[in-house]
Image (tube, rainbow, N blue to C red; front, top):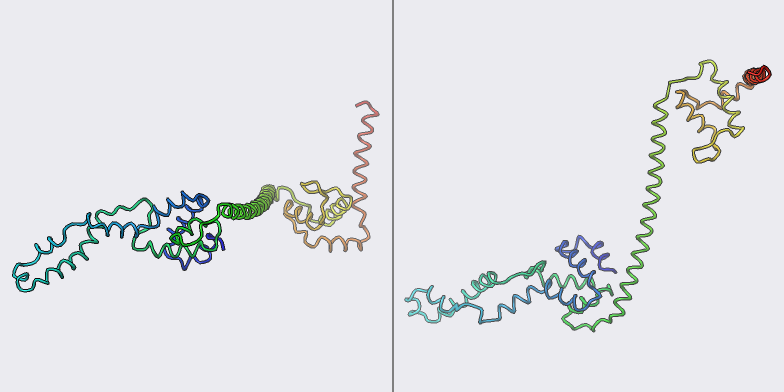
Amino acid sequence: MRAKECITDYSEEIFYLEDTERVIYDLRVIRSDKEATQKYYENILISDIRYEKLKSNESKLPDYKSKAIEMLHAEYLDINPEFTLEAVKFIRENETEKYLDSIFVYKQGEIGRKIAQKFREQLSKIVEQDKTFGYILYFLSGGQDRIPNQQEIEKAIFQETTEELKIAEKRIFELEQQLRHENEYVKEIKAIENFESIKSKYRIVKDKKTDFIKIISTMYDCLLFETQDGFFAKSKQDLFNVLGKLFDEDFKNYSVLLSNSKNTGNFLEVFDKLKEKANVYYTKDDNRKKQGK
């Protein structure tokens, strides 16, 4: 399991999650560089070890025995000389930590000394199955694991990068598809708004609705309508729905009206009128040409 996947899957079980995420991110950048990883390990992850090393350096500690004697009343020393040793021990245990805390300096971003060991143990479990973190795992083990192979680490990083690129490409494609659909949706909304802006400016004469349906239906059958993309309209009902919005008219039952009109005996009457009007226009235009107008 990849280290970052481990953090995602077990985030609720990881203590100091924010620091853990930061350390993993920092190490990902330098994980193929042994020297940089070692330097990071020493500067960020072993404050407790540095503290204990400082504590063991007696030359930097004050003379607590003298301090203890000054604090004790002389009469107690005369009565019980061993009390001095107990006092020294007590003061040493309590004062040493206070003194060390006053001179111990944390490095920028360093994990606190009181949690450092537990933090390293947790970090080892997170990266132990991720071959790209071979160097940090080696240092976390105190050099007990075998020295990682540089080529193996680089190969593992390459494989991970390839997988991440494929995931990123897929996500980009999905986002492009989503954006395209959103753009189409915006166009549809704008189209509806445009229809709304001109709705009811004109309307169909009340008793001519069936004639209107006959004419539009025939025009549809003659392939006189197409979409904005240049394709012929595939749904007559959809066409009537659009015209219904335009003229503020309900055409949901257009097919029923169209079918019933066949039984009236004057189904073609409106087409005869259209032909008559067209002929008048045509003849009028033709007469003008003959008169030289």
